[in-house]
Image (tube, rainbow, N blue to C red; front, side, top):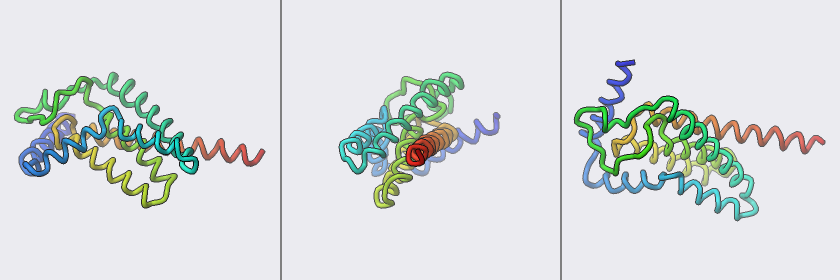
Length: 181
C-alpha cells in the first residue's frame, strides 16, 4: 500500500513539474470547474430531458448521476476518508481552491463518466465520443490542479462507468419485458 501511495504522489509531482504551464493552467482550471457539483452533466441531462427524441438519455443520465452521487460522494468518500493529496504530498501545490470533501474517489470523475457513458451508449457517436472526451479531460484536470490522486480518478472512472452501464442494462431489461408483455 505504501508503494501505491508513493507512486500516486510521484505521478502528481511529475505532472506539476513537467505538464503544468502558463498556457494550459487556465484551460485545465476551466475544465475542472465544468465538473463542479456535476453541473455540466446536470445541464446536459436537462437539455436531453427537454428534447423528446433524447428524453430517454436524459432520464438515464439523471439516474446515473444520482447513482454516482450516492456511491461515490455519500458512501465511498466517507468509508475511505482519504485526505487530499495537497495535504499529504510534500511539494505538491494545488492551483485551485481547497476542496471541502474527502479525496477518494473523485466525484468529478465519477459523475463525468456516469453521464458520458450513458450518452455514449444511447446516442450517435458524434455526440457520445465528445462526451467521453470531456469526461477524460475533467478526470485529467483533477490531477493537473492537484486535488486528486491518480487512484482517486481511476476509481471515479470505474464506478461512474459501472453505474452508467448498470443503469442502461436495467432500463433495457425493463423495457424488453414491457415489449414482451
